[in-house]
Length: 150
Image (cartoon, rainbow, N blue to C red; front, side, top):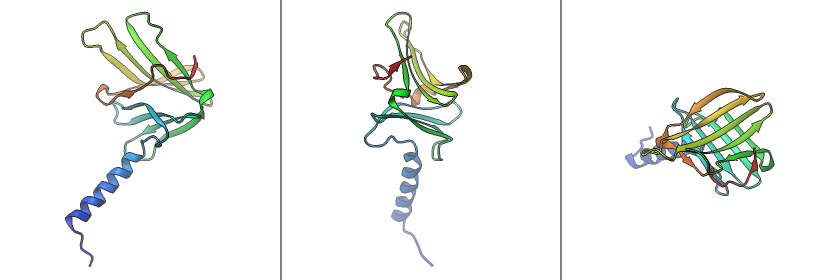
């Protein structure tokens, strides 16, 4: 009968945890431009690898429900033009007739600078779902991204 020490059990636990979180880690040569945990306990991540933009969505620690990578020229962005109360940014990743848009906006005039972020899913140009992010988990670098304008 094989016995395990506390240190080997901790090492095994760390490896399992690391492997589960690596499902949502951009490759070392890519930049994470968007990440959040959604209000329904899923994760979305968008990575910029130069020639490719990738999108992953699903439960943390599990294989992604949706994972796609598109050539940079296919992804688009919408950038705030400096006018209005709400600054907002968006990156859209197409997948056939479906498009996934990760977005970030903030009320620049409120004392709290209230944040809104999430994923819009459109099919044939019609919005079919909006999945909100938890603001406390949001990481985004959408401002100024060099993509084709929407």
